[in-house]
Length: 146
View 1: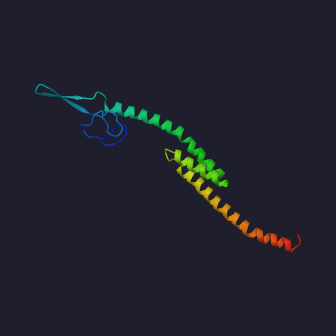
View 2: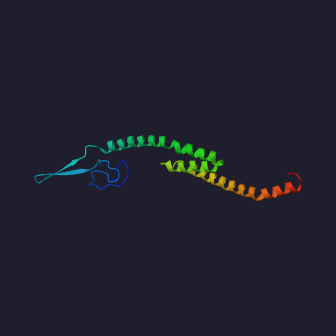
View 3: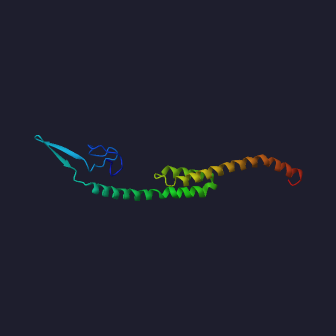
């Protein structure tokens, strides 16, 4: 038997799910009256429990949709601003951190990787500029342009 809310396995004598705390609709409570045992079942039917779970799941899905808008925007912005390496990387990291559903994980990773690639290109360009600036100045002085 499984919980109708979270899907975890329930033991027959569990009144509540040990994982999520929802009531087990099939729980049977034994009452001892004198020498007779009387079984009393929970009044909630399996159909009602499933219906309740479905309604609660839909509420959760709506909240997840609201929460998943920000990681989507941050993923797009991290790709757009990957030309500004630190900004794109920061946006991608924030997008990964707040993405609870992991729907836009790839989008944020792509933005972060592009930012890192642009950072490497920027560092290489700066190194080349510093290496060749002396040669350029020497060339210009030798040709009388400076």
